[in-house]
Image 1 (cartoon, rainbow over the protein chains, first blue to last red):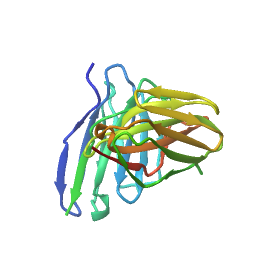
Image 2: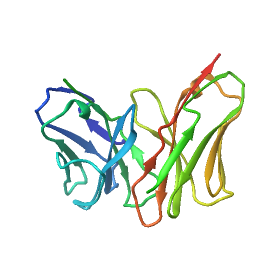
Image 3: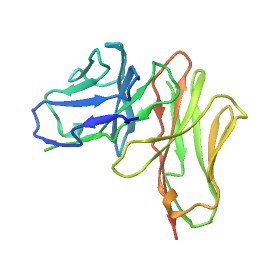
Image 4: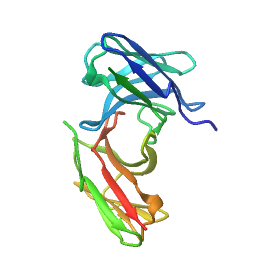
Length: 113
Length: 110
């Protein structure tokens, strides 16, 4: 059974640009959550999607957005990139919201220069 | 607001030297406490979920325990391959998101 797949693995962008990250959950999993990981703040929750609907959103500015497709794949978008957006972005999938086992992908390492 | 504090931030052990990692938490109502292992450049790998005080779970050299205010991850006779960052997270009742601690970086020397 394939795990959670995140693409791309690495990304370098310039301040002011926008970026789209992709996450394909484990087959059969319908809930996808996104987290930002930085050395100073650790893992912080961004958003959660289930059945193409955003269920929860963390305390991040509106530049961070996401969506989920009918096949459960999810994308997150960051517009007007800032240096502080440099981080490892992690996607986690679970069969349904509130499921107590969340499986993480390898993450996308975003560097903003 | 849910909070998770892990200690120590970093721990260096000799191979075979047992120790414990601590995770203190405050949450309105605990649905589950999670332990993950994260290797450099990789996503967190699920280890355990604990649901109620007094519960214990084991996996190879790792044993996780839970009280009403904290959880411990006991590492017995660690090996160099146990070197990683160990993350603790809580899930509150009625919510599905996880609140993470900042992790304990464990280094086991041969």
